Amino acid sequence: MTIVSRKSRASGRVTLDDVALSAGVSRITASRALRGERSVGADLVARVAAAASALGYVPDPAARALASARSHTVVVLIPLLSNNLFVDLLEAVQRSLRAAGYQVLIGVTHYQAEEEEALLADYLAHRPAGLLVTGFDRTARCRDLIARSGVPCVHLMETSDDPSVYCVGFSQTDAGRSMTEHLLQTGRRRIAFAAAQLDPRVQQRLVGYREALMAAGCYDPALEWLSAQPSSLALGGQMLEHYVEKYPDVDAIFYCNDDLAQGGLLAALRLGIAVPRQLAIAGFNDLAGSDQMWPPLTTIRTPRVKIGESAATMLLQLMRDEAVEEHSVNVGWQLVKRQST
Image 1: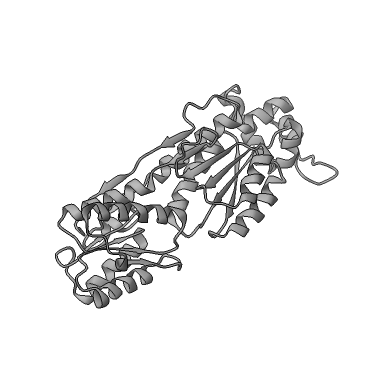
Image 2: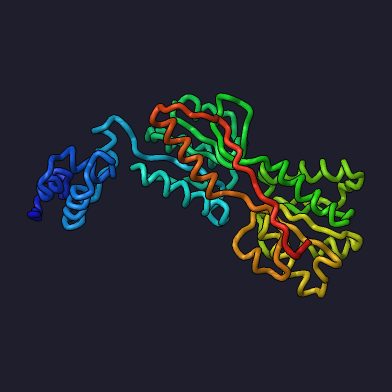
């Protein structure tokens, strides 16, 4: 293989033509090899990759989109990057889409409608190939932007009966109800619900909690703490201290997510409260470290990797104009019973 150093006169960039010349292949073959298309043999892929590496070639996504009349960018909008739930999901999405030749552009909305609107307006102006968004709770303008763009869109974390909507998720309400029923089955009757952030999925878990307690005849709205603050270990500890002081007869706390519940377990240990003998503690999402708490935390395991992979697969089908068998995929969830209940 001959390494050449010619660069584009206009920009000084190493071009695809340079890579093709160096690898001794046509420009089309070089392009297909770098995209990982199966029609190119492994030996040619290796040769082209070596030439690109030696020359320091960096693909120009704008030029590639112009040449193919298609974008190879997928926009993913999530509420937070500080939440491991979305980090796990994003990694699964990126693995799946990169393997198919797409680049992932991440936008963080911080649960703010105006931020999501601004991000959508900006990203859609660049005509991405596809769009992944979290949940269904957004402004009318956001929904209109998505609909008018014509860009294939898949919703994450929730499901819908609307046949025009593509989504991958699970029933947050059913999961919330199941955890509450589990606590009832252990003999608990004064069950508190401690929640932060209060995004739509947390609200759906709250609905399940209420339904289960109302059915059992022991629902008390005074035992709900619904905070708009971000979730944290510190807040979870404060919530436990609040219940112990104000409602000493509370025998279980269902936290809306694991970081709060982990904070509750640490506070119980600090205060000398025996878990679960005096007070049962449960969480949601089965985040890293929950199985290492003392005692290990009972929680709902959410399949965020599966959601990411399934959503990416669905979006790839839509972008390729392939038939999608199910518009709404319910990946389920798992109640993980550990020693905290």
